[in-house]
Image (cartoon, rainbow, N blue to C red; front, side, top):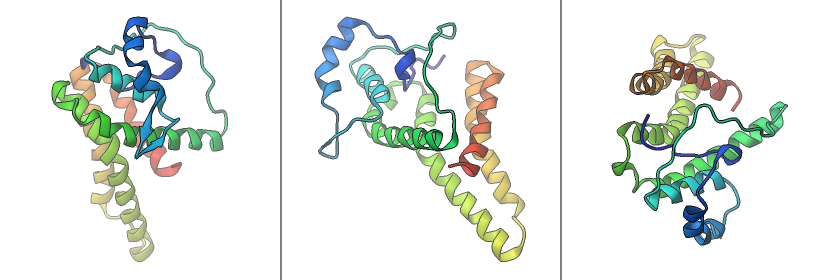
Length: 177
């Protein structure tokens, strides 16, 4: 719906052999800030594909099996690893954004600025509660608006109300991460 997928998730992704062969050297020698990198390989490969001019697509009826965390500790480590790869590979994706759908630009910016703004808003709410015994209505409204704007734009563009469900990710970020 948006012309590209910014991260083709590892166990669910399929690539043309010819496309992968063109990018294999770049993919196998990932570096970040001069050091070898061994995390976020699925996002990195997706961005390499997009930079090379290939398309990435979501296939809603595809079926894949994978192992997922079954307790809080491994889940939090997974989320931290994913966040690191998101921040790192955003630098690779910045030059792509003008060529892609505007929603993808909003999504990439939101994935990077959103957690920072969410953390600042949460800290401000916590400080208000500790100092004054309550939280200002505008703090809660700001936190809700940050997630609803992004999810609403996706729902509108995709013409699919299920995108609004992603707004549940914000409380998960606030209370777990």
